[in-house]
Length: 374
Picture 1: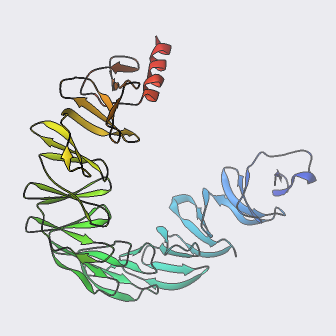
Picture 2: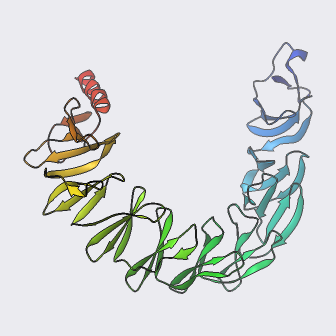
Picture 3: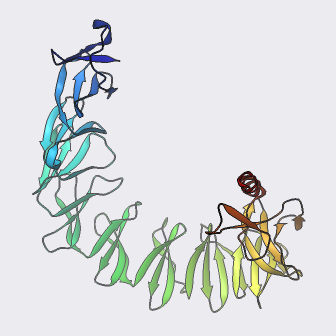
């Protein structure tokens, strides 16, 4: 809907009431009944009849879910619930949605946190820090002792504040730190993983737990710890690589063993093929035949096309595309590298080793740009 502002009557009217537009102020729809308008560089809200509901006194008006945030000078803000357009708070510091509902929000004032459901305060607390837990109706909070615990939806204490660090792992349990030790607890503070670990990190769809310089796998789905100790655990694509006594044990997302190999380095390509590096050369291992390729490679890169790998053969210095499944080279696609010369205008192309390969499509685009510049 388009409207005009009558400068003498100081009122907005529908466009069909006046032929002579007196002002070029802006109106933007907020919903089916309310409209945002700008007057003299400031904003307000009116209805479809152009009756002003919120005066044009604000530096900005921002719809947030089912609420309106209105900012004035000196960073003073007013807070409205949009469906009823009822003012629910003012001069707050910040706000966050409580859970995933656009009708529930917590507002931080200078002295406390207020929880609103629609346009009414349902809970309030004076804790220093309150943070909604994603996907839950609970909150993390910091107690007077400076430690962390949890609150229920009414700001009642569920887990007493005694943790140095506490955050949700989004599937029914929290990672918690006490002093320098880490573990897992559930929402009712039942210990799932004891606080004896020096470090807990995400690896793939599971967790790597470090204790006494050894690493263990915690199964996120079953919430159980695998007792096998490894020298190292890291993620490679959709696989977990577990190193134990110079052996690489490769596991899938279900923690099933896919490979157990020895070498200086490995690169898992898929469930059938893996690259093994020994004595500075790579070989291709076939899981089905349990044999390694006789051909050696100086360089084993990553996939840049479906089932195609960048390689440099043993006695060559140029990149080739190697089809892993068909064991063939792609001779049609040239591989180039790119770099930026700060002394030159534009991109330069090199056809030499030790430059990151790119696809022919990007090469053609860069080639076109250089030709156009020259």
